[in-house]
Amino acid sequence: DLVEAEAILNTAHLPLPLEAAFTNILQNLEVYRPYLPDALFCHMHQRRPTTRDVNPPGVKAGCVALVFTDIQGSTATWEACPEGMSEGLKVHNEVMRECLAEHGGYEVKTIGDAFMVAFEKSLQAVQFGLAVQEQLVYAPWPAGLLKLEPCKRM
Image (cartoon, rainbow, N blue to C red):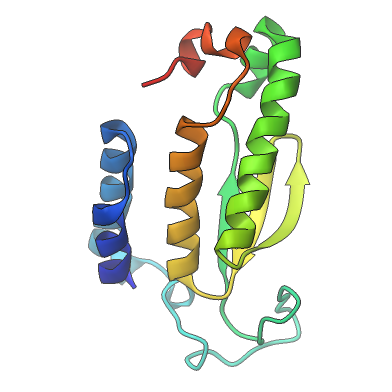
């Protein structure tokens, strides 16, 4: 799956800082793989399901890939520009849900600006992460947000 994820990353059109961050994540996964639980890398047939497994509708029991998101610095951004952040959160959530649908994901829950989403395969999760990052870069953000340092375009 890491080889497939790397191939997808090479075809994505992300700003260099995001591409570097994803490359770093993939490299760390490869380096630390021997120290990480097998469940992080298992396939559907490698682990016996338990009664504690929770699966999205239509997904068979077994391993799922979970993705957690959060808007960096959102508390300070809410304080600096509440109207812009309110509108920006709508843009963010729309992008998240569109990409989620495109990549076969399931919205487990949201808390504030954070999402917990699940996928049947880890490759779907990686593709979703790349698509979300790319779409968020080009989303129609409120002008007030783009004036703030953490929100300026790269």
